Image (tube, rainbow, N blue to C red):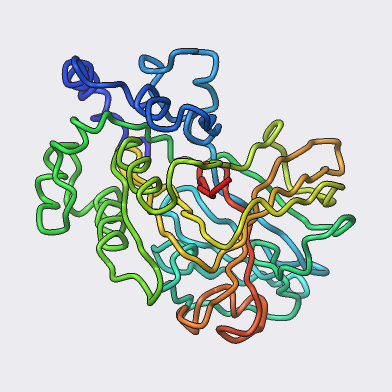
Length: 337
């Protein structure tokens, strides 16, 4: 993804000109949501020139969750990073099997893990059941930094750039992307995912700027909001985490969850549902690292693709039990206070 980022900096002078007379993204947030703190996932990807307190513009582009479970070789699932596919490594008696699951995000309800071949111990903690959210539950997790370091553009600049599969050649030209390159495939995959029809009961929207994400979320939930993201003390390797005291349900069943996409600049795939429960989950690592994790539990999965990775991992059928997952560090959830 680094190649995708280089042309963006050529837009920065244009961005600063375009924002003359318009509110910078973080100022727009504060004007619409004066009582809602900006979560770390957002401050991390505000360009430093636009951050009022530059000390908050650190750790750009974090995200992704790498999970390992299983006995004797176990199962590794890495979500996030280059290509945004899900790579699964299932070890059995010293003979690992590597499977790459498609180019699309496992956080899309239409996602089908048709190539997945999981064997033996596959209770992978990327997806888990709601009754696992209790004090003392142990999970083997690896919170990793994402290679997706794309930052926000001001809305005026983002709106001036085509965001459509029909104009993908214009996107390639704007960002000096070779049409047959890996970067081109990443762009096409993101556009395709944004243009796909949502499932029944899902309202989806791809926000190409922070301002448009604020507008979509407030139009669905109002302005009395809490916006949350997962926060990690520091990056660390694979280790066992224990759910600490203080698991807390944040709100009712309405939420807007926004997942960062791989793109030359920050784009978030947001979807609003009324069948989502959000939890704040404190985690303590074996080495003392603390994580303020956010878990999202989907209570109605009846319309999801039956081949979704979650069902294969949990060995359940659509619509039978709530399916939960932790939010990667560069994703956000909006809920009503």
